[in-house]
Image 1 (spheres, helix red, strand yellow):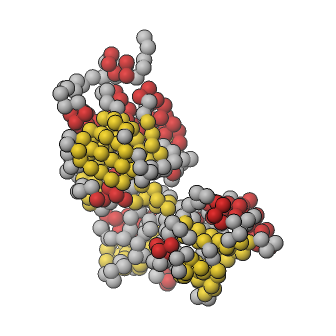
Image 2 (tube, rainbow over the protein chains, first blue to last red):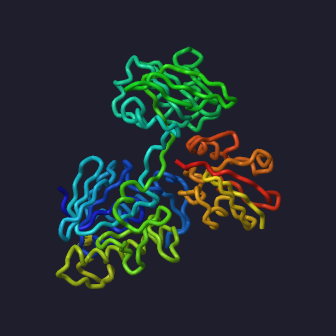
Image 3 (cartoon, one colour):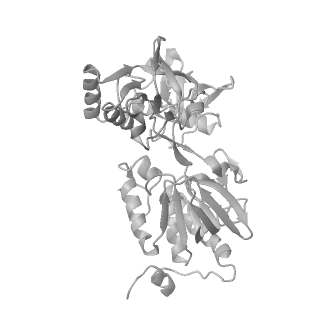
Length: 338
Length: 106
């Protein structure tokens, strides 16, 4: 059990800056994120794209912004729990118990949801019966590639994940690569490699086909794929892999009893607390009259939510308002030596 | 203003006036038309504003920029008439445009 003052859900810019604000006022926090790195949408969607509206930073990329925020919170030694998604929430007297998808548990005084548009999850096949095989013979990510040895694998997608796995698995498995068009978004070198392997008969490339249906008993036995022009082919498959990138889903947060409107959580603008005491929401995931989905608004919301957490974390103390420029306490927390 | 018609998956039809210069995605969001999520806010980074364009309008639309087709690979049930609505800017030529919104965005 990880005991800390505040759990921040989401390691995007808003969550990171909220950690800073908590640190400045002397509260501890830990951060959970479903991605394998900090930065949220800035890192996942636009690491190289420029941002021009961070106050006093005329231009920076998503990656630079993330790195600077990580540097700014370094003095607080914030513990990150990456590749984890929050699942269960339980109130235990005045504290909250949270459990993640990977079984990590937290005991906290308050929760700050800084979840952006939700957690990034793999996009799934539109075909309904796929659910039945998901996790066993139909997969959206690979943990142990040895299970594919000498099997027939049908891989769907045209990006780097689909191409890289098709190339790699073609060494030990019979691979079908199926893609909806003749262009690929993956690296050109990989596209050439896949075409070579197809010419050499080391994998089978199906262009302008999409998944039509899957069939089998306990495990998948075959898939039907449909050409743009309607022709249907049935191919034997032991495994089906789908690589369609990531989509953002609110996930279990939906079941926490929060007031949710159009994929956002309603908050007050005094301290960005939700309708549930002790649960705050900041950044793109929160809504209130006048809400702007800007990073700078997320910073403001995080600063106020951090102060809102104080009364739950230290109910017997009164929060003093101080400036970092002059506050000895804040400077000590920042590790500044004079 | 141009009239844009959105056919939603529940078989409802919404015809709204969209200001020139806005995108078909923004027209949907401003008018609370369901089924367009636009998670990334028009950055061509998420494919959750995916629409099917009525065939006769396909040629009249601005051409796809680099990257739109790559994003459409990720969309839910892409077809030959799929577009990202954040990439279609409304103009006089598009007055009367009709799009179908898919059953879901992901």
